[in-house]
Image 1 (cartoon, each protein chain N blue to C red):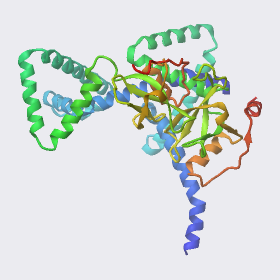
Image 2 (tube, rainbow over the protein chains, first blue to last red; image 1 turned 30 degrees about the vertical axis):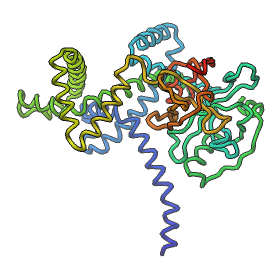
Image 3 (cartoon, helix red, strand yellow; image 1 turned 30 degrees about the horizontal axis):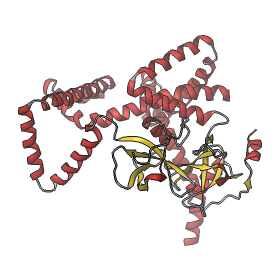
Image 4 (cartoon, rainbow over the protein chains, first blue to last red; image 1 turned 180 degrees about the vertical axis):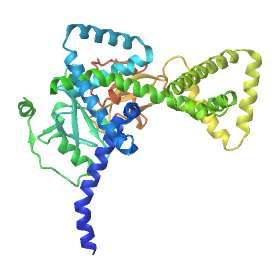
Length: 216
Length: 209
C-alpha cells in the first residue's frame, strides 16, 4: 500500500508542481490585464455562458497580446522616428525626481540581464564564507579595478544566492584568482540551489579563457 | 523574431516595473486610510459605495487624494511644530505616550530611530565602503553612518536584492576601504545583485578622521 502510494506520488507530484509553478507565473503576468480583456469579451457576448472559461480565454489573450506587443515594440525600435520618441520618453521619466531613479535602475538592470555578454551567464565557485569552503555564485561583473593602486589583478563581482530561495543573497567582490570558473549551466546551478543540493549536476573547473570560448 | 522580442522587453519592462513599484508604494501608504475615505463617501452618497469603488478610476483618484492629504498633513504638522504653543502640546503627547506601559518602549525606540534617520539633514548612511566580508579575500559593499568615534566602526552590509535583510558587523577602522560611490548607487548595486555596478575609485582617508 505504502509503496503504491509513494510510486503514485513520484509520478504525480512533478506534474502537479509544474502546473502549479506555470499557473503561478501565468497568473502573475496576466493579473493586471485580465479584467480589461474579460470586459471586452463580455461586451461582445463571447463565452458568456461560463465565466471560468471566459477568464481562461482572456488570460490566454493577455499572454498573446503581451508577447505580440513586445515583439511589435522591438520592431518599431529600429525605425528612426520611434527612436526619437523613446528618447523623449526616457528624458521625461529621468527628469521626475523619485520615479526617475527607479526607472533608471530597472532600465540598467534589464539591459545587463538581457544583453548577450551580460551578467549572470557564468557559474563560478567562490570561497564563501571562508577561504577554504566554496559556494555556487554567478558572475555579475568582471574587470573591476583593484582596490590597491599597485595591484595588477582585477576583481570580479559575484552574486552568491541563498539556497532554496535564490531571490536574496550576497554580492561579493573577489580578486579574480580566488574565483573558480566551472562549466555548469545557469539552469543547472539553479537546480542545485533550489533543491538544497539534492540534485548535484556534475561539473569541471575550467579556465576563464575557455569559458569565453564556450560563450562565443 | 527573438531579437525583436528581446529589444521589446528591454524597452517595455523598465516602464512596467516602475509603475509596478510605484503602485505598490502608493497602495502601502494609502491602505490604512481607504476605509475612512470610503465611509466618508457612504455618508454623502448612501448605498452606492460598492458600485463606486468597483470603478478603477474612482479607486485611483481616492488613492491620489489620500496621498495628497497625507503630504499636506505632514507638512502642516511640521509647520505647526515650529510654533511655541504647539511644541508644548507635543511635549504633553510625548509625556502621555511615555507613560503608557508597553506602548512606551515601542514608541520611544521608533521615535529615536526616526529622529536619527530623518531628523538630521544629511543621509544617515553617509559613506559607502568595501569591507572584508565574509573573509579576508572577499569584499562586500557596506554602509556606514558618518559620526562614529569608537575604535570599531559599525557597518551595515545589506543582502543583495532584498535590502531589508543584512548583517551588522563591527570592523577596525583600518580595514575599511572607502570608495567614492554615492549612497544611491550602492543601493542600486545591491538591489540589482551587481548587474548595475557603477565605476568607483578608492578614497584614501585620513585614519584619524
